Length: 310
Image 1 (cartoon, one colour):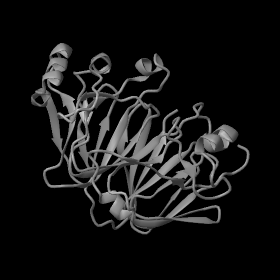
Image 2: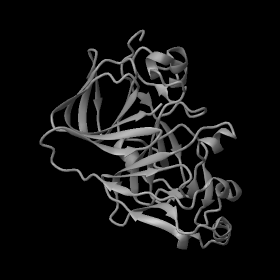
Image 3: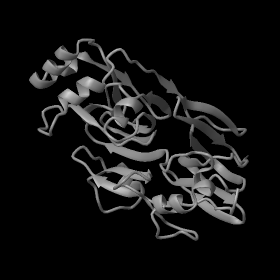
């Protein structure tokens, strides 16, 4: 590998939404209280993050990847990043579905599979993940006539829960929660149902890409007093893997030969690499290029460690 590129922060890309809450804007001291989405790491066209610090500060992350692909991404042949975004919802998002790799490639895009880690959730919070009807025509009829909700499969969720949302699964993030979404490269969303809010639906496309037989499960990772640092699997699929690292004092991550992403979801810590340190507070994210040296994390925190599976 050529030059060493140190870990770096990226500037979030914020998006106002009709379903936004104000938890994340309050945490970050933002004036915008309609901000429902914060894209933390993304190299997708039109949504690229700008690098916030280091020798590439002020440049788009996609430009740095083009210029130093191997040092940034290792042997990964893609020019995209595993995407990280926060969703801060007061109301339920639209019922939607994403295409798989074959379906997305036919329209010039990538598969969009994703996962949700629940940071905060109101007592009655739930997500939609799956649909209890195998007849696509009936699903579309119910969506048009406003009675799709009887078929939706809901899962109650609480802080520390994790769920994989594979392409083809009918789903929606629920009301009253702050979620970090980690997922693959694609940018296509087909809206199936919107609870009468009047936004455009994509029924034909949704019917084509959905798999009504798909199901998923929520796994539970409650926060406990951490007496010794340890790692466990959060989610794993064919495109990406996310570990949950609970750190009591310190943990060192050796060079992996591929890039990875650190997301602080509880507490705070210091991430040090090659003589440079980054303070990570609750909801902060750090991109670690493939060529980076080891990263030493000190503090009392929970960190998600995510990487793409090339």
